[in-house]
Image (cartoon, rainbow, N blue to C red; front, top):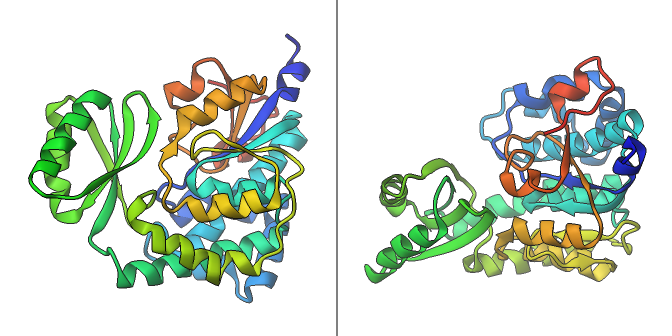
Length: 316
C-alpha cells in the first residue's frame, strides 16, 4: 500500500486528557505558528490571556489546562494534515477528546469550542464542590477484567459503591470509587498483578453524575449552535457513529455518565475501513494501548514530534 493511500484511509483521534501541566504543551503553543494563531482567537473569545492564566496555575485539570489541551489537540491535527498529508475520513474523540473532535468534525466553530471547554470546566468544578466530592476515578493497567470484577463484587458486598467507568484495553480499566476505598482498590489490583496508575479528580464517566449531564446541557450546551458534522464522528461511548447536530450535543452531555469503551470505538473504525489512526494531542496513553496498535498504523502528532525538525510520521 502506498503511503498516500494509507493516510487517506485515516481517522484523527483526539485523546482523553491526562494530567496536563504548562511544561507539557506550553512550548508548543508558544512556538508553533498554527497554535499561536489559535491562541490569539482563544484569548479573544475568553477575554483573557490563556497562557498568562495557565502559567503557574496549580491543578492538572484547571479551566486553563483544559482549554490549552483543547487548543493543542486542534493545532496538532492541523499540523498532521499539513505536514504529514493525513486526510481523515472520520473523527474520534475519547472522553475529553470529544470536545476538540466536535470542532474538527465541523459541528462547532473553534470559538464556540473554546467557550464550551472553559464553561464546562467551571460547571464541573461547581458540581463537584456541591456533590460527590469524595469520588475519584482510578486508572488500572495490567489488570485482568475477570479478577477486577470479582474484587469489585467483594467491595459491593461490604455495602460500598463503585462504578466501572471505562474499558480501554483487555487489561486497562477505569473504576470510580469513594476516596475512602481507593487504598483498598489499589491493593486489590496489586494482588491481581495489576498496576494502579492515577486517580482522576474530578471523576468522570459514571451514572452517578446524571445531574451533571443535565446541568451541562442547560448551562452550556443548549447555548451553542451545533451543525451536522462534516466528518462522521465515532463515539468512544460505545462505538456509535454520529452524523447529526443533535447527536453531537447529546454525546457531549452523555460523556459525563457513559462508560468509556475504547475497543468498541476501534471496532467501528475497522468496520468503516480505517487503517491509520492519527492521535492528535498531548498523549501518553491512547496511542500506546495494544487495542490501538493492533491492526492499525498509528501516527502521533504530539508536542515533541511537532516541534522536532522532521517531516516523517512517528509510527508505532
